Amino acid sequence: MKIRTCAVAGMFYPRDPNHLEQLLENYFQKKQTGIDAKGIVSPHAGYPYSGEISAWAFSTIPESFDGTFIIIGPSHSGYVTSVSHLPWETPLGIVDNDTDLATAIDLEADEVSHQQPDNSLEVQIPFIKYRFPRARMVPVLMGDQDLQSAEILSELILDAVKRTGRNVRIVASSDFSHYVPIEKARTDDRYAIEALSDLNVTEFYRRLAMRGVTACGFGPIATMCLVCQGLGATKSQLIRYATSGDVTGDTTVVGYAAIAVM
Image (cartoon, rainbow, N blue to C red):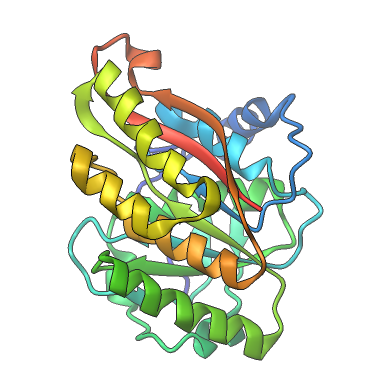
């Protein structure tokens, strides 16, 4: 059986399964949000920096969820938008691909692009394997991230979900401000995130441009919000915000947010 093997294990998160399981167990302790999110924003930095924030994001989805996660991440290497049809390996075991849903999404299946050592999708998979062991997933790598591209991708995903009748949750993989002074990161990121309170993705893009916010996965965030709107969502909630400086003590930081869409 062909699988997508781990590419950034040992760099962004532990390769040793016991170490990884203990780390995830620690992250998820005492995180009861009482939310049943249709979609989330989860960061994709190394776990020491953003793992706690990702756990807050995934904690807004009940751990009994056994449907399909559609994970949308930005292509850091500039590949075009594509879907993977393969199961993905984690140190904790394989996460199966929902191939019927993946095939129903009218996108090119490009396993070469997905095999590259890009962390945006891969770092989300161990959280899913640990917390939702019966769930499947469909990974989508997003190239162009402009508003029109987000609208087109969201329509393709919504059409596939409705035709297959799948129970889905959407994960947008993104960090926020990159390598800016900590107060600027906090102020600018929150300003952009506030636009999503009523899922206004047009305003979200406007605020990103106005402040020059260097969020790397703004397209996946917009796509996730649009898909969730199509599934009945009306609002979002910022669950936690942090920066790399909270760990390193540096004053030039990367911003991380856990956002739930309901």
